[in-house]
Image (tube, rainbow, N blue to C red; front, side):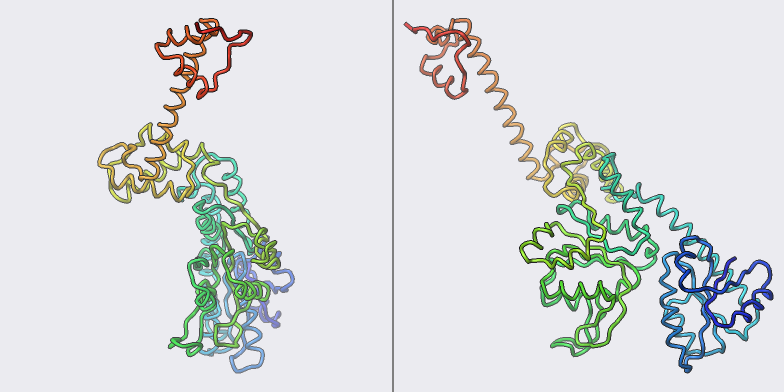
Length: 458
């Protein structure tokens, strides 16, 4: 196993490596090549030497430990302590070290610590590999189907998941923006940390700042205790800012500063805290248009859309509607223990033609409602919500009316042609009055037969 160490005592660690035996390779590490080690997969464990907590270099080394812990490959970090310093141990573990080893302890303990760390790294690598493979076929309902645009989006999401780049997801309401953000988080090295969503549009302007950044005790009236914000709650995970286009101008400036400096302050505090979360944003609004109108900062928009993904509306995924519907049917029939197992042909026809203004979320709710109220094996039109049922009936009525109009036009044109365009004779053939025939000709916009002149009716 390849164990890279950060410590000035190169000779000491070389001797230590020889004592550990041939299974362990202790190699000095230069920070400038660390990214190459991450990408190559050559590093199994990181070891950082920590001096006693009362020595001047302790804080500097602790900050380096915090940075190493955030490595994208998820390589575990071991703190190598000169003495049994309880304060240093607490600080190292709190900073994210996987484990620690005291220099005066038996070598067998070090072997155990290193082997456990390597096993953890191998398990994490296998987990990330399986997550990456599972992303295109994730069981999230809305991602099933054969639509080529969605397939490309999921492949792209799988590709960017391993990075820390800020992502902006756009699309109409209900297209699955938060679900895509969750998939990106789940396929990333940050998956073992929290996914924290924030609905920017549902919070009043006076609360958004404390919701995001937290506040100190006494920061304002009613702040009887300290409260951590969503940035702190996300830790080294993912913060999802939904409807970021609705952020007020003052918060836009603060969000931009946080993204640029990677630090923030709680309300009522001057102490800067590190922002370690990845930020994924979403909106159903036209941000470039908001930028043009001055409602959204251009510099924040350019910062947010490092990577931009636009989700298509359901009405453009017609071939996937039935597949999605059956996916939801199976999920909710099992969840609610209901007998529904198929969708009736009339409902399928309605689903294919309905415009789905609420997109996948609307389809999901329609199926869940139908599953709950259906007492038999087949979902029928009467199990549909009132809006969709009435829309279906209106479409039927409209279709019938068009069929009737078409039939009347054909019948009158045929009678006129057979009578040589003699309207009186055509009216007698149709068993209607001549005035009724004239009215129908006007209503149905029937032209005179080509090449014939209208004959006298008498």
